Length: 593
Image 1 (cartoon, one colour):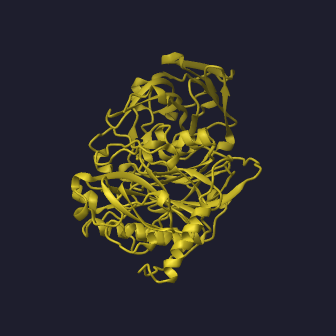
Image 2 (tube, rainbow, N blue to C red):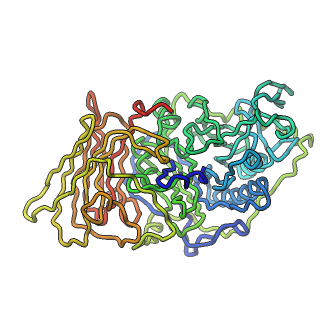
Image 3 (cartoon, rainbow, N blue to C red):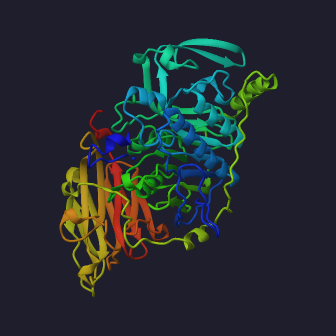
């Protein structure tokens, strides 16, 4: 996926840090540089909730091993080893579930030839077959990593969410071992045979797939990415949205999604709206785009707009614009915990999440335990041929940090890191207007701006300018198609925004690379816009690349018969605003893919 990204210069990829008195340690011999990093907290007041569930989640901002000199299988094995080491560390901190990023196993160099992709792919069993790959009796290159990850999940007793390249043989006969014996079915995945020998090349399909291993190592969810992004070698997932859902043994129901999926309704938004889910997962290789779609902006906005918790794991490669992972608690408005630092290297984020059970969604616990008993009987009879792999590490652990400790360790960069690349949205298509200075003896100035479909934005503000060195600000309004991937993908969106600019030209807006943080006298009281569709996604992002403290702003949606009004109100001045955004998608108006 990422190889193709830089074929398009304007491409857009839709790609609780443990802190103590010592620096975070990185896995030895894992191809990861050990550097200091920090987590960022976006403070909010928690809400009270009845019948709540608390769980501990972990996400990994992962700088993958990209050494392909020993071949695809060695690449997968080494990255799987490193991921399991971080899972072990998360488990020691009490994590029930850990999420890994898109391309975390294959690296950003996923390959473009059939042979290369095949060497870095795995066979994934169907969820309905209740398979625990740890107990495979016939293992080959297409199942070794599946077995390793399954055994890791079982040994650790925690859920693992992994993205990988899945291979499927379109016309295979599958052998299935179940409680009632051995059965075969036609036309399923290739279960254990070597695909290069037993499946014609023309019958092998590749998918970008999220796999969930339960705390007993069972494959309990398999989701194939629906919205591919410059991934011509993958087939689009066509399964029902419900197949992206799974319920854990600790009582939480999640919906899955991969990268560019987050810009669409399926599967996650559909599942949230249909089933009332409160928790979502994102594996991604996201490339930052200013001024509206950097990783923390979008993760926070999506979580708040959908009123759900979001566990987002991103690939770490700042030279490609890929950084930023975290736990975003839009369901309870508790603090978000995230890392967004171009110098951090691989960073583990672990934190507590509060949610509520979902009605009418059954747990997979019973069937998983039943299946475990079946597989355990094979172990007792020594019929698996599996040698147990005990996970060990010499990694020094630190105590779970509280919110105040994390906040006290924050440092704001004065300049953007030179190795952090950004893409930029073409703002010339947006209706825009310079925000005028106001006199010092008046207050609450109002400025309105409209675009297509009767879409209008209104800003209430004061701007007693002190110096031209502050820079400038523009109000933006847009309703229409936006293009991503060099014009390959179009989607319909509506945006109200205030954006920092270096001068009075629109092409200078959000061009902060190499610039110092500038503090402004602009005081915003309220930004509102009338949107055709909900959810509406709010974000407030500062020039030091941090989310603005959301204790100081309030977001509400007012529902009307024919439209929704999104309202952002502020309690304090945003001293170094980069962008203030209300964003919404109108999925029904998207061109047909």
